[in-house]
Amino acid sequence: MYVASRPRWTAPRLALFGLPAALGLLGVGVALRAEEPTPARATSLAGTERMLSEHFATSVVCAQCHSSAPQAKGLRDAKGRSVAPYDLWRTTLMANASRDPLWRAVLSTEIQATPSRAADIQETCLRCHAPMASQEHRFAGAAPPTLADLSGTDTTAQLGLDGISCTVCHQIQPDNLGKPESYSGNWVIKEGKQIFGPHPDPLTMPMRRHTGFTPTHGTQVMQPALCGSCHTLFTDALLADGSESGHRLPEQTPYLEWRNSDFTTEGELGKQAKTCQACHVPNVDADGVAIQTRIARNPMGGDFRIPERRPVGRHVFRGANTLVLSILRDNQESLNPQASPEEFQVAIDLARENLREHSATLQVSSAVREDGELIATLALKNLTGHKFPTAHPTRRAWLRVRVKDAAGKVLYAVGEHDAEGRLLGSDGKPLPAELVGGPVHAHQSALRTADAPLVYEAVMGDPAGDPTYLLTRGATYIKDNRLLPQGWTSDHPDAQAILPQGVGDDPDHAAGGDQVRFVAPLGDAAGPLTIEATLLYQTLGARYAAELFEYDTAEVREFRAYYAKADKTPEVVAEASCEVPE
Image (tube, rainbow, N blue to C red):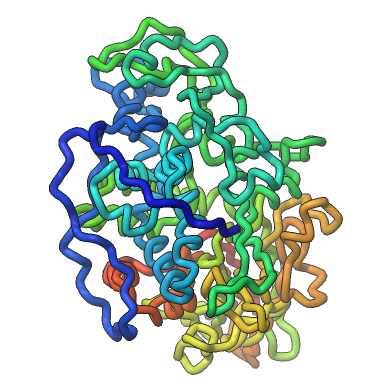
């Protein structure tokens, strides 16, 4: 949804403390495509400073009471590990939503592709990636902030660079949550500086004294509908001249997918009822033990005389994006996140654990040899409460299947990839669908050749029905064969926005997973043979990356340099093997 622009606001600077020197702007270039990645720029994004604006505060203000301290016993689990919101949150993509160099690169390409709608595009994207800056401008009746605004050191930059920060989510009112009026970042924050939390009768004086905010009981922070206000995003398709085509794309819909699953807690409880927060902000520690602790400590580092609380959520916001977390870990000088490399590594390990233990399972449910062929059935089960892969269409997963002989030699394989994460055909070269302008990987109900792998992904189509990798050109999905959640039904009220696309009449692609036939022509190869099947995942699919790098902006060049140095090994989600006798 795009809105009209507003007058420009010059932000006050009085509330900033100890700011670094002014930094260079992140301009959006319009030159020809760079053939090779250039070094990341020498200038850096501003670090987070202690700052109180009229309606918000940066996270370091909250940290004075909601981070752990050596002398305080509060904000720790039973084994003494920190569960302080600030300590955990700063390692997440939520904290770094506007520092994320992939997001910045994608946004810059959208601006370059449709410059006449630059203001509208940035307003839409910054609403959820730099929400404090967005809302502060709205309160002031000012023009929405821009990507360039996030390169400075003033109030707008400080608010924007703090990402999805404490005083955003904890100030969101219950108004319209769970309704279409709240989607696409249309959450409501009102005047008054109320900080909502799940516990009744909070002690108000310390927070009011130190920050000006008032703790207030508000259970909406525990409701998936709050998450759904940004994680349900519809965008209007634009033509090259900036006019709207009349199409609306469900850019991401994990909240709607969750409502149409066995995990829903809205209305009639699902068979496995569980909120978004239960998985992504769990109220148990790393050992699965329910957390009970004081939820704040005093600014001097000691404990407040307050009771222990339960539940207490670990603000880990665990997901699957190891790529951007590793880039943040390895490029601290230019991206300037609050977390250390060691803390980011903990977050990366948690993401890998989440992928391997809570995302999907894979089984070789049968395997036989018939007429010179090895025939197997592979069964995938989606463990998440939404589609997998989830949300933004950069993500994809695929099946790699190998057949090995008794000596471990690979006799046949489908789904192999190179060092760049590109899928390889039977000739050992990247498949055409991995390259710029190529076709789309068709959905497969059976795997018979390396030239036709099974890739689970959402691929956008432009108004003419051609594949597009620009969100602002996305009119529909020409393919969406991602694994459906358990309990998904086609007659749910939200189903029309989240229907699979391009799966044909495959009856095995259904609620809860997929079943795939694997056929390998092995002739009279001596046994025993072993089938090894692996479900692999990429945050940024190789084809999407190739299309992104066709654009030349400062942000794309920067991300390309980071990406060139990053480990692009696909993440393992699930593995299964089966021995087939002679």
